[in-house]
Length: 590
Image 1 (cartoon, rainbow, N blue to C red):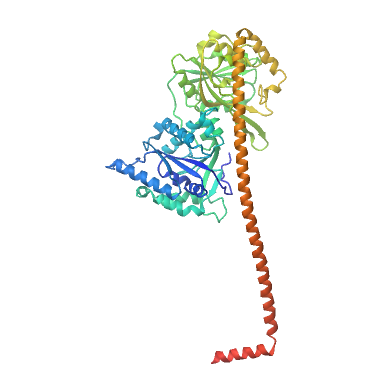
Image 2 (image 1 turned 60 degrees about the vertical axis):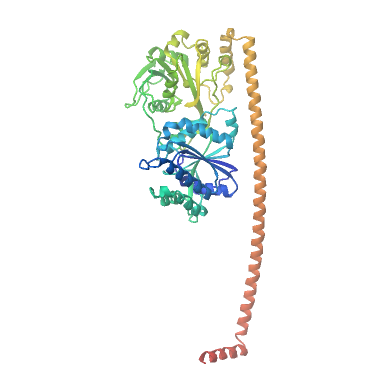
């Protein structure tokens, strides 16, 4: 990521905006200037305050009166900025982290009620724990969206700007708020109770002054933001997102739970393997062993400070994916088994989330979601991500699984005893061995799915992925798929096939309707922008005509001045001029 702030400012516009503020003054501290700009332009802006403003006031005798005062101050401040749509959630100030689910529900309700096109939420890189908890609630509200709900429709096309209140982040958008400085100052002064405790007048403008460092001298104050989309939240775990934003996520070690053996298959890709192992080492879950299967390549090395026990399995020659998986299972001693190939990544919450799901009574197979990261090789910076999406996220459907695999294998956690019941991976399959295994597994135990990204399935364009970004272009792709379908033909029936086809048809129609609706929205937005451009062009033309007239008038004026100067110069050589000068001198003596 580029950590340097931009060198130019950006104009941010919206018809409807929602601000998520942890505390009553964070809206002014972080995005007061932009709020004022939006309301002045006619936007409908709503503010959701998450906490009750009671933090650090243990000595206050009448807490109800104090709370009433804080609410009134927040309303006065926002009125100065042009906002009257205010909602108070009143969760306990100072302990928002214990109420993230409640805050997330409130954010979902606020989004559904307003359908904003702009969301202003606080950065996760803040000093305050409540601020970080507010980001956690925002992530929880958005990350589970998978399409087809009213909330999905409400946030379709939503732009998200993360603002900073008490700690500089890494902005990619700077907004010039020079003209709003007086409004910002008046708004923060409305929080009189806080000015008794903090030097908010200077703090409010200090960060805005800092943000002008990369801008032209005529910008006197600027606000910094990080631009995101709903898809950014959907395709990243919270910890993974914080790392991508330039921060260090807070992780608490999980030492209770079942032992997990992670089978890692590799062959002569030491750099990718190091990244995969590093992602496991950075995880919160600690009851882990790694079974490292070298499929006939150079024996890999593991960092000396790697935190988990490693069981090395070195196959004398390349045996293939299925055989490598079977070799790893033979050495695994954990109560549960997970898989991570050397070109994939586990997010910090991955194993802890899976282990938590496995605690449910009767649960034997659990899985989450994996985002697909697409990487290209750049001559200067090496492999870098160029796309990130979530093509696979579906609740357990054993009938569909008979026809297609929708579960990335690195998202699964499987009870160890099931491998003894199901049997080994099929070594006759050069790939699709995971799909074949899942079909057999689904006939024995139901799977439990959590729609949350905890892993990354990586495609390297031009690399040596087994299937790659476009697997259907592989010559034997359909032939191998046909082999798996043929192998399980006895599990199919006309009734099952009819149900699967009918479900897929309904999903296709729904997806097309959603795409058509979005296309219509975009067309409407295009017409609106065209109208705005036409108005702007008309204004520009008026200014151009006025400037042309001013220029012509100035030219005429200069010509007249030149004519008069020439006339004066001509007169200066005449007898009448000399007589005039003599009379002027005589008057001066008198």
